[in-house]
Figure (tube, rainbow, N blue to C red):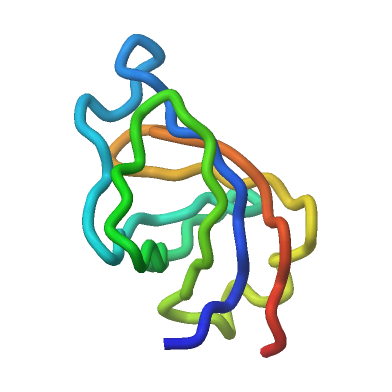
Length: 98
């Protein structure tokens, strides 16, 4: 699977309203808020690292409907991770070719 973008993000700590457990596995799916609209995506984690609450990371992302989000994927565009509530925030680092 080829990524559509690379994002930098910080997971909120449990005290800030974030996840109580780390994100684990090779992939993780959640909606990203970009330009006040939610888009479903998959984080391409690859090497099964534990993504701990309160920490910062960079990952490649694959969108389920790139055609709907492509024009909003500008370097520096702010994003939020959503899991029934805001669990993280960050920005677009790189947009790969469509």
